[in-house]
Image (cartoon, rainbow, N blue to C red):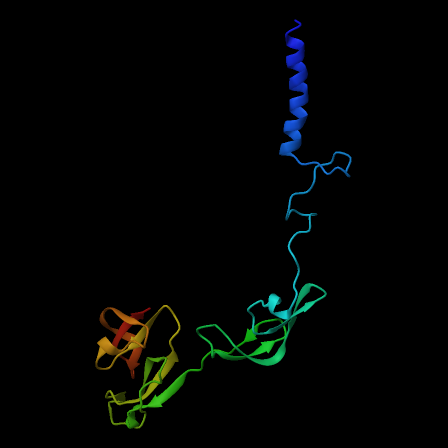
Length: 198
């Protein structure tokens, strides 16, 4: 029994030392564990210093650093650039931090002057000239107008009166073969159309 007493005494001394190495104790905190660097309550992350620190990547907010904190004030009426692919990119800040844009309008071109759909548009339908010669009241393929829509959907049906392989707008490709489509009808007679996809 005498040989065990010094060993137990040494173990009792070693345990507090080992614990104090694993968990540092603030000598002024009555034994409380000291906070780790960067932990909550131990300083944490620093606030902003300059306005540039507060950039939220939104064109319709005014970013500023005030007393070490970021503010993002919504702008109203300022010009901005939207990111909706179906809308005109030129917009106006709406006072809620967003850029308000409007859908791209449909357009019509007159094929008598050989004007195709504008860039970014596709041929969505064909118009029949009401004054062209008729056969028993049915228009004889007298195409007068091209109805064009802005290309923004993932897939779309595109009218193709002649070269259907080149009917898709830039950024799209033809899927499958041309088929007769009521969407592209001239005076009730379906014409060729292809499916275009991104």
